[in-house]
Image (cartoon, rainbow, N blue to C red; front, side):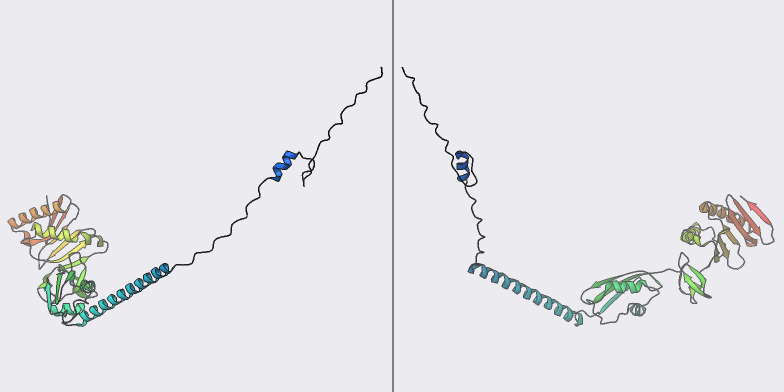
Length: 304
């Protein structure tokens, strides 16, 4: 029996698909790469829309409205300017009535000169602030207020300074207010009887106390019957000194515990008057709890 010869079928060769860049890759992968979609090209920007006829009309209407509004405002402004100029040069607002209150020393003519005001001046164009500042700058005016009453009236109210003392300033006598500040040169007359005020070196700080000291002094009436006061002197060491007219005594009052010192002085004056010894008294000094009485004959008496 002869040997059986078997033959094997030939092995089917592997088929490899060749693509660009894909040599040696499986067909499935090459297929996936082949079907990948390409990017869409970028769209070009759309052209700007052309303005419509309606938009052009709206813009023209707005421009016309703004122009008309500007013309209207310009017309109103011109009318106001013309009206104001007509009012300030016309006779309707001319000053015809001037009322002045509170003046006893200053007359109307001097007040008009101070504020540089004339009859017929236009009340509408008048600066109230300028008039008040001019009046406040006058040496005799303490306060001033001005009121305008249209069309032709002006009301001026002033408060004049009251002279309380006389002082020496640059070799001449001046009136001074309650704090010793100079007002104006003194003239002959009834006010020449005001007491002179002297402030010694180092006693300038007492000027602030001067109004209260003098008011309480006259209110207490402790000097009643002692004669008029010719001189008031502020002294840092002796306090407030009062020098009587003629041959009257000199009073020296310490300002510390001022009201108590006034009461002590009042009791001593009453006692001296009762005994008839006040006329011969030279100096009465009040300090602390003591009162010293010095006669003109240099005899000293101490009283409590």
